[in-house]
Image (tube, rainbow, N blue to C red; front, side, top):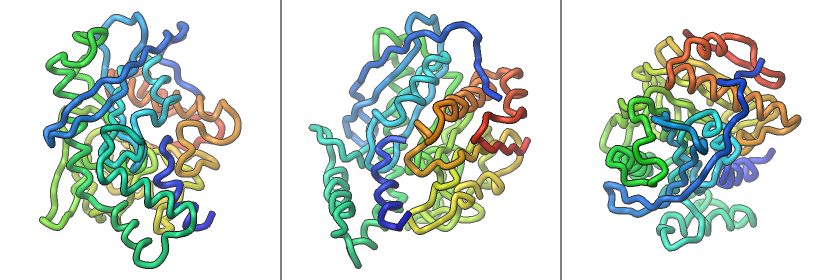
Length: 327
């Protein structure tokens, strides 16, 4: 895969032994979009999913999409988590290129850049400027504002009548893909160095973190010491073909797994998966099912507190998955 293809995938993944928390038939999943306003004053859409007819209170998973994507990324993954008894919330961040009344100047600029990149028109200084935009840690401000707005709306019951009183804010998980994985790392305690110096975005209300195609040290304000305060349960997911924008290998994405303090740290390597493949991995459908079941087992273990799920995480995963743990 050439570097231009890798760069396009990084911003066009506008995406994206088994475990089952119950042997009973999974419920249907309901979905609805809510408009919220963050502390930065920006109004944005958030897609909620939840299991139909299941009594609460239910744990909440917030999912942060990749740079340029939107709230409809990772529908299979989100629906699987919701069917397993979770409420999922997917905000559309300010960098989204989706045409809408809410699209920001940043989103419009990104849409232009992606068209130029796909056409091979982004060269020289323009290409370097694009990479700098993609790596800019300042985008975390708006993204963390969106996440905070979701938690606050749930606390004040300003979301959907169907969910008011059914969300357990004592059981929260945070997940994300690509720049959303970076957002998840930051909220999980990774220290980010910006122009004004080191900064922590740690959000203590989250119990566990799931990092899909995340970043290692050397980019985006992260270094070898950035991960030393990530003490909460974390699962990293990457693929054997999941390369970074600067040519980093998949092993780079898993370096934080080794750099964080031990204890409830897990990683999954998906055979054949590229940057945009994690909602529906290539190959047999069973691979995607196994991946989602393993992710659900992680949530059940560390958001719900299931000892049975914790033991399941120490068993061999399905075919096409390689698991490691530091417990």
